Length: 225
Image 1 (cartoon, rainbow, N blue to C red):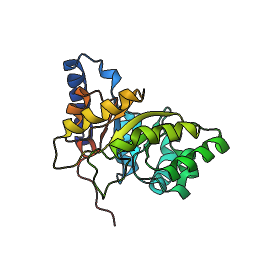
Image 2 (cartoon, rainbow, N blue to C red):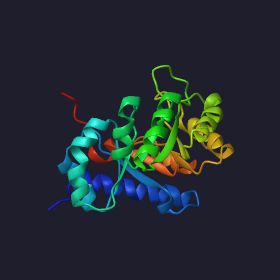
Image 3 (tube, rainbow, N blue to C red):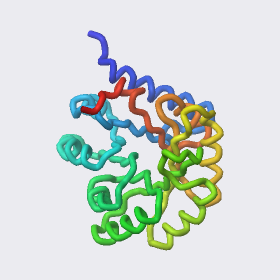
C-alpha cells in the first residue's frame, strides 16, 4: 500500500529543510517547520500530527477556534501560529488561542496585544511583520520604519522575538530574506519567519528559523465557499 500523498510531501519537505540546513552549516533542528493548515480539514492535519509535526500556522482566528481545540485534546505539545492579519478586536481571542503571533504590524495591534497579554497572563511569541517589498496591498511595517516600531513595542512591554516577511511574488526572494536578516540582527532579534512552499530552501540559507509551508505539504488549497 502506497504512502498517503500528504505524508509523502511532508517527509519530502522535512528532508529538503535538513539538506538546506546542512548546506549552510546548520542543524536541521534549528529550522522550525510551520505547517500552514489554513482551510485544510482536521483529518488532513491529523495525518501530519500523527507523523510528529507539532507546529502549525493558521490565517484566521475564527477558523482556528473551530478546528484546534479538539486536535489539542488529542495531540500534546502543539504550537499554533497566527500568520494572517490580526484585527485589534480579535486580540483577546488571539492571545488565548495562539502560542505565537507572527503578524504584529501596527501600533493599534501592539497596544491591544499589550493589554490582553497583561490581562490574560499569557505570553505568546511575537514577530513583527515587515513589508519588505513596500507593497500597498500587503500588511506589514515598512523596512525603514521597523526599528522605531520594534522600539515602540518594547516600550509597551511586548517581548518581540523576531521578524516575519512575505516577499513579492515577482521578485527574487533572496533579496528580501537578506534584508529581513539585516534588520533583525541590528535589533537583536533571534527569530526569522521567512520562506514558503516555493522558496523555503533559499530562506534557510539566509538564516530562517521558521519556514511556513502549506501547499507543499497539504496540496492545493480548497477554495473557500
